[in-house]
Length: 243
Image (cartoon, rainbow, N blue to C red; front, side, top):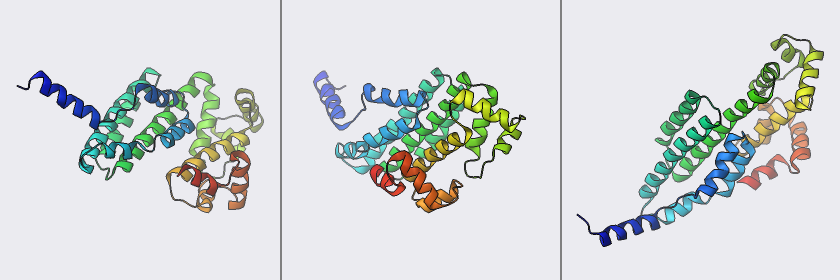
């Protein structure tokens, strides 16, 4: 059996070789996730992009770094699962997300892959929490309209389709949306498309033209014009700023 001096030396070496995010930094993620704030989750991902490199520098080999990163990823999956259940997400939904991503962790080929998967998981939990928050603060009719819009962002969306989906007139659909959300349906559609455009610019290699087409903009120039007005930079400039 190792004596106390030997044990302390082993523990000391382990601490030097491991990098743990302090709870104060993790809490920022948990707060963003439970608020359904996907933009904040993405910003935190960018702020901590150096984590895989710092972890590798503390390890004796790449395989050791991968093992430790995998361990941290599985821990993060469990932590995010618990905090979202506590915030109101159905436990089975939270467990499904956790288990789905842990399976993906097994196929990760590099430290950046694992890092991206963890933040993809955080984004996924935040999206689900957005629905939980919405159900608490909006009428079932409005929730149904908003969900329809989000599920059809890649298509041309007409007011008549939204109204028909909830079995009310176009005039009443517009009035309900404006009263509860404080913005028009068309403004909400544009807002959601811009959020998805930003995600695609961050997480994929799709060109601005391809993104404009995917999100049903009438042209790339119209997409670029609206994006620039809202973000203060072109889609290409935005992508360069988050790489």
